[in-house]
Length: 149
Image (cartoon, rainbow, N blue to C red):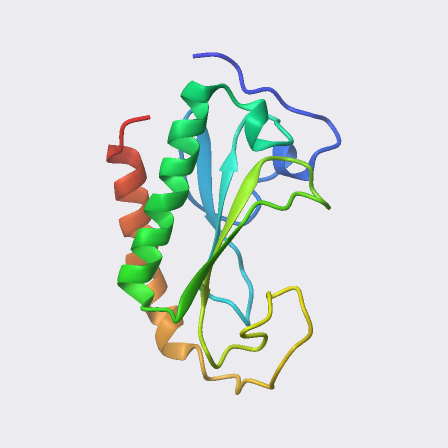
């Protein structure tokens, strides 16, 4: 096993980047602790890479497979209106994918979650969804650990 390449000034090299769900040699999946978006996950490449094409073709496959796996499980468990996928990295230039469950009545829908809010959402709106997260977290962990990488 090769040591993970770390950058001393990179937030995602130094920290998990959220609530750690699962970590493998190549990548990790975290859940973002966001009150407005409880179904918000990140797939983070462990080695420091700024762009998807910095990965070898052999590493691109498990990276996108993990993103697809998380999206599939989010859809199955949370039944969102839509799932947003994004690999921005403008603020933190470390390869990571956002997998965000979106609902027609969420704070920003249909805008991106980083856009202008469209409505106020009652504090208890996501209570049932939050109760589903432990089972989803476990499903993600089990699926990532059993998928070929």
